[in-house]
Length: 208
Figure: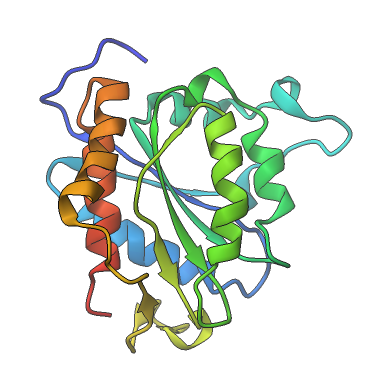
């Protein structure tokens, strides 16, 4: 990526981390994209891993998709919307993420979990965070949990129709939470970490 211009909008694409048919995560991802797009200081895009065609007879950077790599390289931050499958994240997401490395280094990352049950993919997030950190991403302090996702959105309109975003108890002082965002900010020397953090908090605080 070229030299950073702190006056330009942050580019924070949203990655939809499943290709499964009938996925409720798609509605959550569009909800997040719509929420991010409201910010004048951020531009976004939806990256659907279903549309990234990768070989299955090899892995890693040898099979990287040029368009995906270019988008990630341009990004300042990444927002993941990922369902929980069998206590973890989809294997195809790992296959896609492993195709890049230097494109991720020191970029802020936030995670939105999605699940059919009430806890919003918390076990998936526990599995995904070490992978993101190993890839060089700076994971922010706060997550979003879309619990009971099948009951959250109207499939016909993709719009939400009932409350259901679950948040963990707020026992951590706000100042401490912001310190987590400032870590991402310092590591990037750019407000992408702070903005990614504030997006995640804002989505989490949404009155669905």
